[in-house]
Length: 280
Length: 280
Figure 1 (spheres, rainbow over the protein chains, first blue to last red):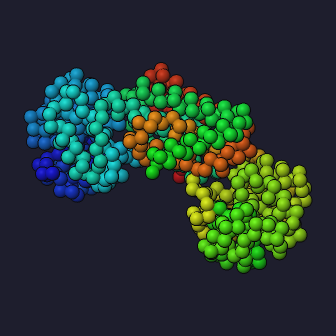
Figure 2: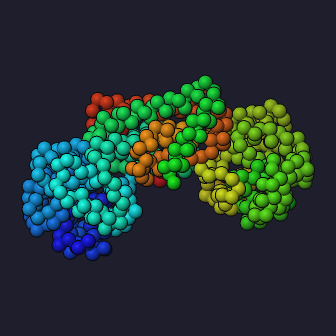
Figure 3: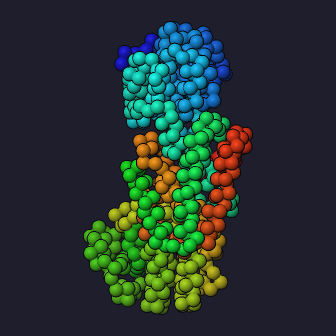
């Protein structure tokens, strides 16, 4: 990939900071601009070598930019994408890293049908947040879902694929709706279940917490303010996933209630089969 | 600790094999005897240097033994402990590593009220099983629960504490009932929930599985045949833990159903607080 003259990262947190670091370390961008609300945090990011320049004013920061990547919390993404497209559509194409896609993509396409935008969702992250945890290799070997629609401008699928592959990621294409359905099961439901498990743990049992509990609840340590809009923008799919989960939990609990050891073991065998198949 | 002349491990799997390796590598036993049902597997364990001698006949294998550690699946433990006590009570004290304690301890105390037995449960293990995964340092830094009762012979708490500490573990004392109540929440419920999550995952979503799903479901990869008796011997406590979990999941799902973002975020904050407090 020819290096970009200038890339703008809107929201320099864990995900945005990691893209900035990857672009610099792989010589994929001559200048990386950070756009955020806090001048102080932008200066910290400049001093840490994560970005080259920082702007609290998106209009100024986007001048001459060839690529804008919106890495804000999910509930701010659509507005930031529309703003970027209003300013930089002549020179730049635009993507994001949001964990839900249908609402954002629809909002952007409604506001600016011709925006040079394509949605992305890298399946990468951490239960920690903030640029101090950003890593240049965060995206290496990770899956990135790209979600074109019938309105997506010609060439954007190729550009986005080339971009993420240049960061070491594997790209999957699917519609925003298929994406949101899948991550409801593979990410949002596990987060809800992990939270319920943490909430259900009596304080007095804490001293017997070991690796099983720690693994099963790990994602519940994620930032509540970041997860709230993920759930609220994918409500319908998550509600359906919870219903599927409850039905399976009921089967296990019924076997236990009725003391049906064979039925219980059969379910444990089947659960292990699925875990082993997907867990490679 | 003065080295034992001879220690017998009944059931040379992941847990028993790891104790054998730790005893040898730390010079805590001159001879480690393995007792199992398969002569072939005992010979493999001898050839792998895990045990010194192997016996399929417990009576012969326990001759001259000073300590017997029963490491069989949970549903066989009480019988093996009673057998060992019948043969070796003059020379040996006896413990086990079973994940549930109330049923086993009660069964042993009913069959042989004077058996020199004290229950142990090391919070160590792996979702893999078998002596090939055993490790000399499996118990280092782990918590081991010892469960004395009013009938436990004098001196056994000290002996068992000294033994596990010599393997690098931290010891916690509690009643069998308190133990079973706690692990229902910290281990058995997470296993049930992880299994339900694996069962609820549509096959088509598999390509979007990432670290969140993998962590949350990891324990579901455990051997069903080993977990079945853990659940069935701790049924009442697990059923109660499931009820607590369902109540918390209901709170989360209700907030989502009603689109109450503030209530949802408050629950996510509270779940994170508990996870952070216990997850150090």
